[in-house]
Amino acid sequence: MRRVVLLVYIVALIAGAPVVCRSETYDVLIRSGRIYDGSGGPAYTADVGIKDDRIAAVGQLSGDADRVVDARGLAVAPGFINMLSWANDCLLEDGRSQSGLVRFRSDRLKHLTGKTLAEVAHMRGKTAAETAIDLVVEDDSRVGAVYFLMSEENVKKQIALPWVSFCSDTGSLAPEGVFLKSNPHPRAYGNFARLLGKYVREEKIVALEEAIRRLTSLPAENLKLDRRGRLAKGHYADVVVFDPAAIADHATYEKPHQYATGMIHVFVNGTQVLKDGAHTGATPGRVVRGPGWKGRARKSKTVDSR
Image: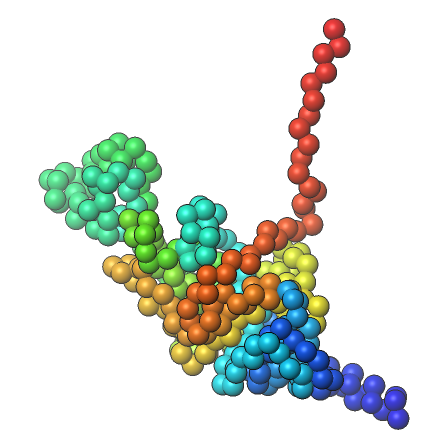
């Protein structure tokens, strides 16, 4: 009999079906969501149990929890991994990590934010080349700018490639305070939501299961991040809960400081940082290092042998 039960358990795992687990107590229990586990396999309906900073179980869970999240009709996936972010400076300014001509250092030039180089050149009665040089000199900086060089057709071709993962290539901002002094690229607020809303749901360039794989396990494997990128027992509890029918970006070049919508809950290392679409104020992020990390370099000592 025990062999039969074991065989059924193994077959269920291979088939990707949720496994019935014995009753336990969890810190967080995410109920009845559509599980996209990061593997790229078919989604299935199950629960996710979180204890401390780890995923304790994925399956049909019968235990209790300090907090229960109703995920019926929602997608539950591993936390998305940004392959190229410039959030370091933003985190120093705002630890919550919300953190044309788009960026000037000088307050005297900030009124030009959002205008094109051609518009500023016309205002000044100079050529575009002369205006560009003048702005760099006046601002004593490289002057942040957005360049419209990409082909939408090529973007779609790249998204369809199975080895391509994704990034924002910008900071992690908030529509408040110091961040309002410049205009970021719209991808600062809407990169992943645009992928899931426009290219997955609307244009069907890739399936949702595949898009999530390339937002989670693919970059985790490429970067060799330990126990990240999957919804699996023992992995760190980086979990997102979102509405695949509603997730969308709203940031534009004219008004970039607009949050995406459709992301409902986010857990980082088991702690909830987004609840019902609003930031909780929690900052449980950690430094995640790959196998190249050998520890901090020791300062060499100079020995005078004279």
